[in-house]
Image 1 (cartoon, rainbow, N blue to C red):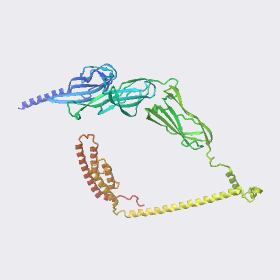
Image 2 (cartoon, rainbow, N blue to C red):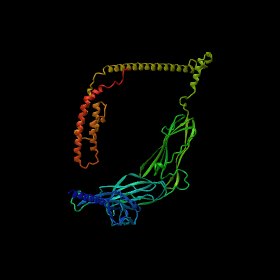
Image 3 (tube, one colour):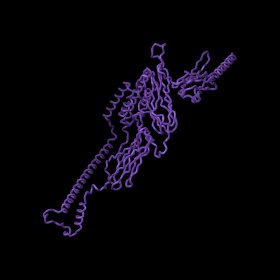
Image 4 (cartoon, rainbow, N blue to C red):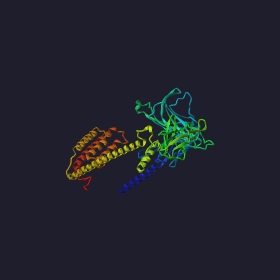
Length: 597
């Protein structure tokens, strides 16, 4: 009997080893396509099926890149066991986009030692006869097939849909050595083409080439899903979706280099202008700064192409430049770029000066000639800094008279000449002395008032300091007495009731805020959610359910949220009771904020 069992075990082990070996090998590989021939703007679905166990990464699509653009590849595996016979199948599905007409060969592809047979594919031109109405197609257009380096090209894509789609995506066009930017939002409208009504989605791009030569602007790829009606089913709700792929036609453009004789920073555009702004007006005073803002605006270029704004000023000016700002906006199917510089100018001496003109050369792509954006020269007058405070020289004369009087000179030397026709009238010197005396009295009164205000402020500060000291001493005396804040307790109770109402209403979006407010009211701002372990754990579970990525079963998710809210309620009640018992006692043992000196 023991020998029989040993023989049976050996046979079973051998069977497992043979099955495992068969399970691990690839027996055969087959390649198929869904259509042949195929139009130039359509896609080919290539399916590779491996019979046996194969690595999911065993498929290499690089041999297909010679004649096709390879799209996204998906892989699936299937295992079946019939009468202890295990069979596994691995399937790779990828999308191929032909880029030109002709006959091409999908080469032999190898999967773990097994190869597929080559497949010849015929790519035919797009059928545009009047009697052919296609369901979905993409068109492309460009405003210029020949342009200069860095000149903007306007590229337009139109997607024609004969029926509604479930979902879809339209990729941007591609071009080597070019900067491609979408302009504005998509336009949607309807039109009739070849007797068929289409919904049209139009999208525009600005293409700015960064190198000269001949380039191919690759058409964008559209991938979408539409409802595939099943005539054997009665209700459309069960219809399955069908994937569609379309690619826009390629466009070849010729980018010309910078013309000879251009000795300035290359700036191709249809419009360039430069403006200035003086926020302070036209008043210039020696030693006072004036801010000058210069703005350079160019159409159809990106901000990196804008040159620096030249700054030339006379030697009698100090310059303090600020960092320039650049920006690019989209308007009227074109890019508009701006460079703005801010410069603080300080004239050092008065006089008449001429600020030289600001000239920026640029290349007009419409006339193909060099033009200049200019700010004309500007004549300015700088006035002295003291001219407004000393309108005449009469004051110094009177001061000299006063000085002479105080120097002890004889009175006869300072007697004014009095005309016989003006007897009885005070002289100009007497009037000046009177005004000086009045000014001196006024200054004395102002000084007395300021001194009195300072004294009042000092007395008030001393009284305040004494009051605070008394309050501090009283606080130190009563520090051992327990205190109870009725207002805080009432506020905590209101916040707690509000939190329970939010949880009862299952308003998960409002739970975080109301929970935070209750904790602040309960602990007087001395703790936060992370210090409540049980509450914090319940909140994390609630967040995980609320922001879960798998929300297919709404009923099950609702039940889980209800359980999480119930758990959160229990944790909140326990935390409240615990804090009210221990938290208030701990709050009385804190040291005084201002220790006694």
